[in-house]
Length: 226
Image (cartoon, rainbow, N blue to C red; front, side, top):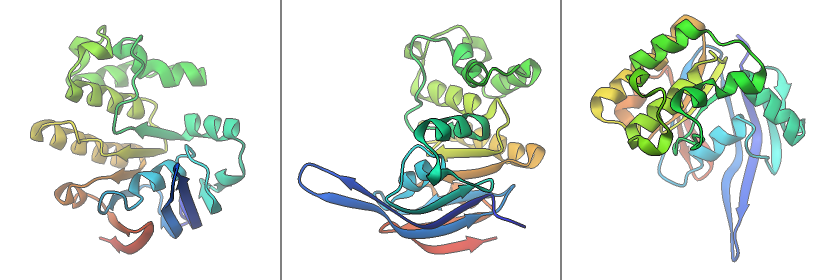
């Protein structure tokens, strides 16, 4: 089975005022389609950078990132954005909701940007499952952190994208909602054959995955497949 994501010898350095930080150091890894992969490691090891590189949010210094047989590192910023809108659902650590739009409008945003017709029944079921159907007309600033995170999760899943990239998606949730979100992601993987790549600090959550990527100092130190 051909990999849906191939990261080949990728390096990425952040330049500060006085020093540089190498977030990724000649990193290579492959992700198979339809799998649930967790990326784990200490803070600062490059987990979120790897996720953002796969999603085309960051340019790399060297190397190639191939997603669905397309080398996105060769794309212009605009082309990467269009590719991401079509194929990738992002769950950000800090929500990234539009404050001037309601919960429902935030969830519908990917459809508006892609000029697509939403599956309203699926979205309603999704909102009910995540217990956000009663706050559909509220604005993000009126919500708790946990509610905002669940809205962000619904927005990422609503279009049933082929790839879901999740950066600490349960970091603001209690135990009950954490388990509910993990069940939802596993169901999305099974029912829609979605490829899920999740960054987490929680080793117990990582045990739900099909594969684990252990990162250290910007490199993959171990790739463990169940």
